[in-house]
Length: 99
Image (tube, rainbow, N blue to C red; front, side, top):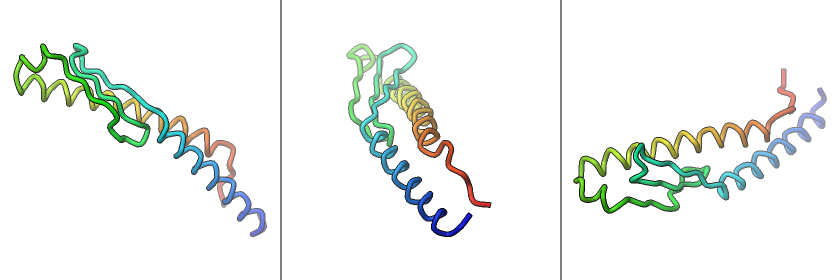
C-alpha cells in the first residue's frame, strides 16, 4: 500500500469515526431497575439526560434508592456499551488494517 492510499484511507476512517461519535451523542439509551422504580436515560457517550425515581422507591428508604439507581445505571451503561460497539463497528467495517 502506498503512502497516498494509506493517508486517504486514514482520512476516510477519521470521517467515519467522527460521524459515529456525533451519532452516539444524539443516541439515547434507557436503563431500568429491576422493578422499574428507577429509570436512567443517557446518551451513547454516557451523558446523563434524564433520571426518574418513583415515589414508592423514595418511601422505601435510601438503601432501596441506592440499589435501584445503581441497577438502572448499570442497565443503561450496558445498553450504551452495546450501542457504541455497534455504531463504531459499523464505522470501521471494511477498512483494511495496515500490515
